[in-house]
Image (cartoon, rainbow, N blue to C red; front, side, top):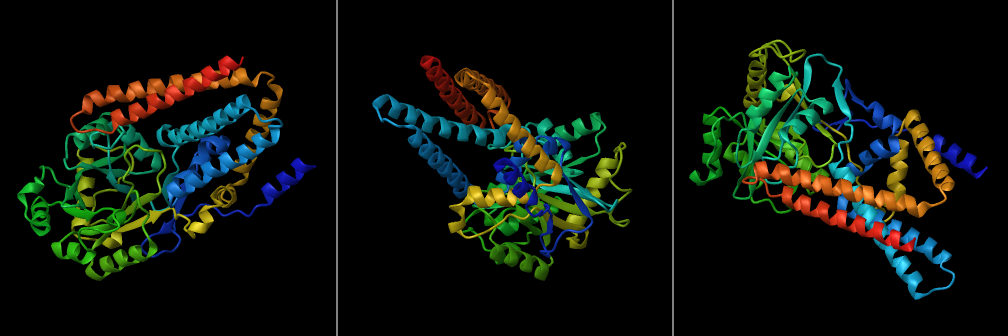
Length: 463
């Protein structure tokens, strides 16, 4: 009866489908479809639930809330079962707390490093394609995505083209990616670019072919003019990344930048007031409004797309079907021309909105967040959740020696983490001159491998 009531409540939850917004207008995006992968519907608890975590507004607060609630619930249940306290039982309790923390960290690694299926965006307009004007690979100091992984990720998200904007140098990544696309006859294009840090201000320079030495320029205006002489475009990415930006919006506009990102990803969320200010400035001074994923390889989630509407006087035949010889370059020229002309009418920024509420609500994040997540599921995904939860409960109840299962799982996870750490170290050997994050990731994976191996050993000793 209890199970029936729970199922009835679960399937009676209201349905709030995931919908994109047009960032500039704030209205719901029209003539576009967000396609949920089939795998994410069949294996919803494993492949779709991460979607909820990736869309956090305040990741540190929300993840901390989850961890504290998990520890609190487990501790209460453990204390109830702890009839007669003793030293060994206290050690067992401490080990349980450590196991919860390690499991939580493993889940975060799963979110960040496991190649989850992406939600793909599809336009109802055959003359509209989607672009990502801000992305990185292992050739950036903090990137972990290989050139191949970057291509696959963008294609799976529905992008017809993207800008590879490594930190402070163009490098060979864009050319190498274009060669891979042409070799495999893939329908996409790559725009060369660089994310330059000029006196604390980040600038995305798109469509340039020669490296820009920022030390040659005394001020931002001179730098922007140098980019324009190369027929490049200057976009200010994630202006909100710093609480106190080194340059104001007005100063950047006076320096001659071509536009701003009005949606993207970085360590700080874009506050509604600042977003309105950026949009108002762009509309008043006819500056470009674009979006960028700022994808470095961390996680598989995409929540920002820049739609580009092809137009006869701007573009050759639509970017559809297989790219013929020279066609990719022609399409790229059309996109760069539209960017240079600041043709905002041909662009629209679409994003998945993030829920924002008071910090007091973050205290109850596991309950409130889960409620909104389950309300976003369709019937198939809800059936998937019920099936997998019931299967897990039945399997655990039927397994007599759970400690043996725990030993196997801890050992297998430890081995996988160690192999992944070795893999990252091998990749780092190829890009050691420009990348410094890969060895740190490897050290973290080796540390987690050691902790999981230690937990496996403690279970073996208990036997």
